[in-house]
Amino acid sequence: MKVLLVNGSPNAQGCTFTALSEVAETLNREGIETQIFQLGKKPISGCIACFKCQQKPGRCAINDIVNDFVELARETDGFVFGSPVYFSSATGSITSFMDRAFFCPERSMFHLKPAAAVVSARRAGTSATFDQLNKYFTICQMPIISSSYWNMVHGFTPEDVRQDFEGLQIMRNLGRNMAWFLRCKEAGIAAGVPLPEKEEQILTNFHGIRHPGS
Image 1: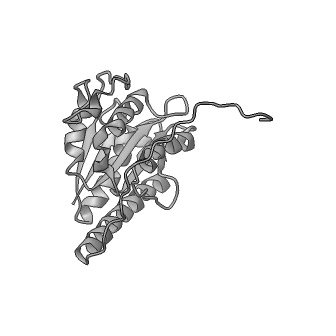
Image 2 (image 1 turned 180 degrees about the horizontal axis):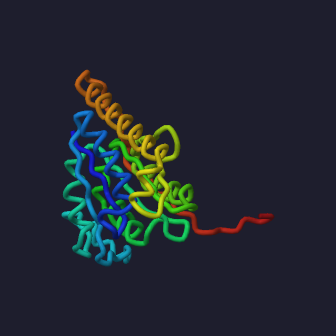
Image 3 (image 1 turned 30 degrees about the vertical axis):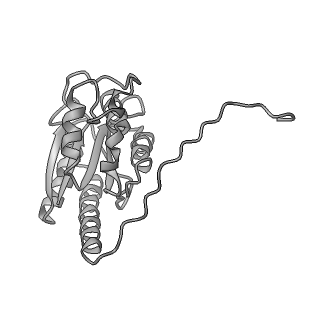
């Protein structure tokens, strides 16, 4: 089993990486393979609504790191997406990245795979960013893995984060909970527990009709 941890910070060895590393090390001790996927410093375009990804083979028309991630995601069992806080929200890079990755028609690759968000900040904005990232998971029927508190660390430098003992404990508990869920899912499948029935998706569009008296 493998968990892919996405570092949405432009800093490869910064605060977000420090938090994700704590999760990864715990997963490794639990026998789960991990890989940290760095978004890096190169610009990542937002979705341009060209809908080319809706055509086979289901790749984004902007051929960049998003397509690299999609290839890995197909063979990944669980995900952790990490972001620092920029102006009380996730970074522009990870927002653009996730907008495109989760719009891909092959987002069935996320179906029932556990996911978690990890947020780092010097001080404020963590809760808003945490909520923002979790919305990607809920639209793809991904079980959200929680911890002993909201998944966040605080600090201006990696050294600060290493002094956030509660935050690091939250990361370790998150790793243990993720590993436990993956083993339970594996055991259920081995025991013959069927996955939930999948209906064909229904899309309802409302045209803003104003009714009398409304």
